[in-house]
Length: 452
Picture 1: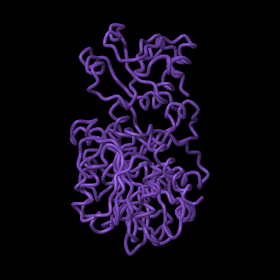
Picture 2: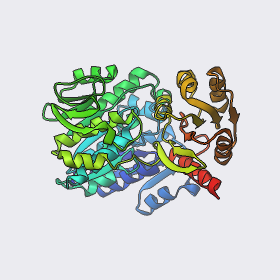
Picture 3: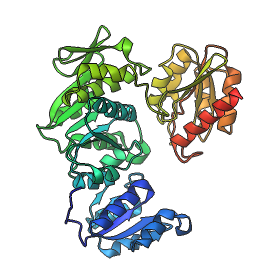
Picture 4: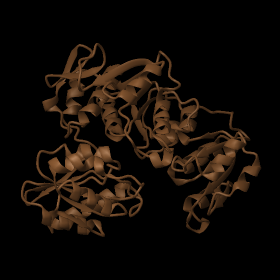
């Protein structure tokens, strides 16, 4: 990593630990900063805070007291999950204390260039696919970001020969200043995380940050079928590389007669692509565009696309039990992701859905419920809302359950041979589970119990 001197003896507040705050604290400590770490979790339960304290770092646990700002900090590194309307952050803004996220810090120390991938849906799949394509061509990608690996952990070990393939959330992108990926990818923009951002305008602005520092020698790969994304592209200074499922393009990635092209070159037939669901073609087009920029040959692209079947918790096939196919789509935390998952199947769907109530309704799902869904098993804070939505859509086979095991058992009872049983919650997991991964794993475990 670059041995920066800019943080030596600087007073910095690490606000919120989890994985990214912990890594940022270790890195800044190594760079000579004077740190205070502040986390909401109580000290007695906070092993990360205790580890940092052993290094001589001051820790403050159990809340976010405003008096911390009396330390005259030069900078705050904020956990992405902490909202900007947090009183401490609002007060920091009034005092003109800069607030960044750990992604910005990682960029500053990295010797490797970045590929930054964002969008409302498909980020993880596209990130994983790009990583696989670059590996297939014997390049040296490193994967990081919102996908589960802290960016600064990866950046500290990266060399000039690497490229860091980074999944970026809107939360992370709100806290960047200089971050500049060599290649940025914007897949789509739909209503998501509006409880965090406060408005769709603010959410779109956060997503657009992925390309805000790029210049003409950089590349912005964007969805030409998405009006909001296209509007961002018109303001971007990078070299533009569009992709489209709907129209032939003069340059970029596009589809015609089931053949994927890049510029005027045929790459692969869509019939050979292993990823299920039409929505995944969007992710494939974006990944191909990145691969071609990095010189990945067509035979290598085809080899990956004919074998890559997706990522865990994203439309993940689990098993077939008595003629019923079970799929885990726990990562579907918004309406559009669930809609796309449901429409990936021709067979009748028994849907398992529900979770954290962010105040939104589910009426946007009524058309796909009417056409594709046979039964709805709902759980969590939004269970009743989802049941009512199903009833309005004419789906009368519904039940509210209290556990994932009960949900799987009920779904099996509702189903017949040939049905698809799909966990695609349309909600975040935090009302009942720590993460969507934990929720998905509970689903998988419950499915396997059916086989016993």
